[in-house]
Length: 251
Ligand code: PGA
Image (cartoon, rainbow, N blue to C red; front, side):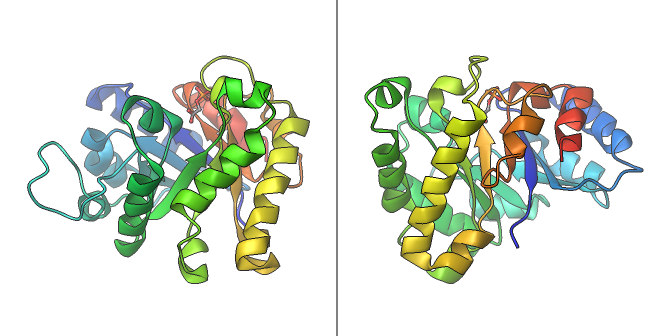
């Protein structure tokens, strides 16, 4: 059966020293607990080696927030999936709306990133979700369908089973405006149905679909109570150890 996952996404926050402090707090808070979900933290590239070493042997896995769409070579400033893997990270967030919006990441680029992550033994957490205008126009399902078809539905069934999805309505990210649990459930069920049509019901049933967008300690329990919501991708609330722990405890 699919796993429940609570994943933090630190984005471009915390210096290395501050990040080590936060990761240490979290490790200590979870040292005597067996969470009812997988726990992941997505940290900046510069933190991956240190934080992975610090969390080695703990219940917390580490994710990169991005990886390059090329395998290696003359791509100044880029960080490849192989490099990410070599730090000890296990996961890679791909296709976050901030990457799509501010860095021009297209369906084709995200398709390459996903393949490279998979080929290097990383587990992608692949983000999808509609803009506010798209939700207002009622075309959120079409948007999400196009994102899946454009970047992921080329994968083999074996490859697809390595992916976790994060549905993150862009209007809910960092805005304090959470999707209602019913809105989240409706979209997650729709996404699962698309996966079932493409890869069959067993694969759909085994795919973890996380919700992201102003998920916090106050609303996590309600969101996670929905049958198709298998956890969360947490931005702002993952920057405080106690609050992130409270979200983990929602399971
Ligand atoms: P937020 O961000 O929890 O701060 O809304 C979520 C995300 O962007 O992954």
